[in-house]
Length: 120
Image 1 (cartoon, rainbow, N blue to C red):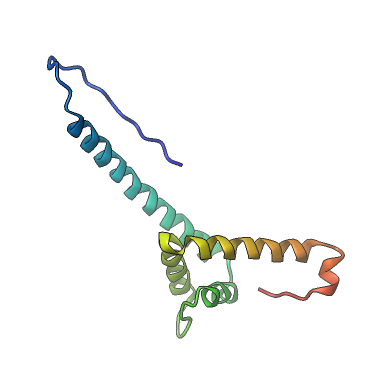
Image 2: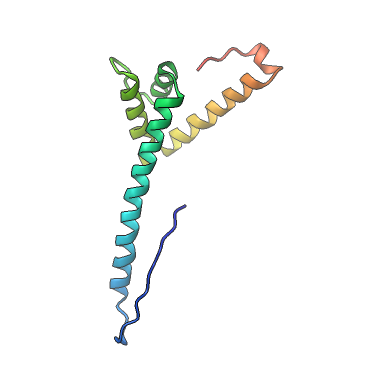
């Protein structure tokens, strides 16, 4: 998932304090997670703003039950990204992405695309 870098310094102390090592690793890991989360946020927001239409963002918002009233494209994208980055919503996000992939596959299929009219 993510890389964790640990550096070890040799000291003249003979005893090893496990608590200090755990705290050092946790501190380093939490700093990396903040950077990763911000990178994900920026990347997702940029993706939604550049690669999706307002109508597509409205469909995604409605799926997540996010209000679309009086919102511009950037606001919709921001709300979607905030929703998708919340770990409590992981199941719903994965389900939506899976279903959207299914819809796109049906649209690209020569046979099924004739019988199913799905717009997102």
